[in-house]
Amino acid sequence: MGLAIEIGVVELDRETEALLGTSGKRSARTAARRQLPRRARQLRDRLRELDAIAFFPPSNRDAAAAAVARLDRITERGEEAKVAAGDRLDVSRYQKRIWVTRPRPGIDRMSSAWLIRRFIDAKARFAFSEAPPSAGAGIPFDMYGVDFSHTDHGCTFETLVAQFGLASPPIDRIAHIVHDLDLKERRYEPPEAPAFAHLVDGLRLMYDQDAELLERGIAMFEALYRSFASGSAVQESAPRRPGRRRTR
Image 1 (cartoon, rainbow, N blue to C red):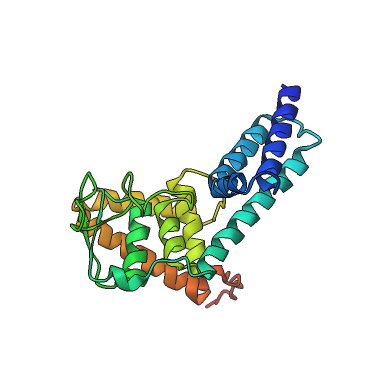
Image 2: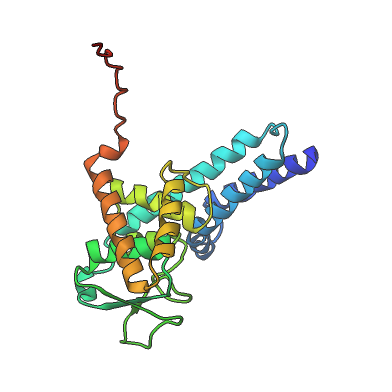
């Protein structure tokens, strides 16, 4: 078992370094860069799997973890550079539209709908369908095979943030919650995630109508955004000093 873990970490380290390398033809380098986000997630998951079965971490574990972290940083810088270079969608082309998603929205669809109405299309209307609408009948999101869905950026919320250039500290914090819950990962492990999982489950139990369920979810994310934006969510209340008991 120990040897298998050691070999697994070596292979992970080598593949990560190969992705980070600059040798080879330009077309090969371009293809490798395109797969960086997906491979970064896969390699991170592989490292977590190896950690879970290793009673004693192998000697090269730290080197492999550093390589995966470096791959993450390069991926994030690459996405930021694309947005900075103007590779973002124009929100003026997405106004007063009907946005179509699957029934019984969960955390990714709730947060994506909030993001759409808050920062992309203030007059957005939402409809529900099991399949994407025909061309011109609406803009599909969080559906299989459409542009605004799970991509190398991550979940649908993260795809919308990246494609419209909406990143900010409060939105990034929300993205971390949505990412871990929707993709069932532990990439960010935000402390709010467990509570939000229960809130979404509760809303789905309370509301049978998809439209009302989505609107309640949108309101929930608006409250979270305002809390994060104000900074109140990161402030811990001071412990209350016990008062002196009054006696008669």
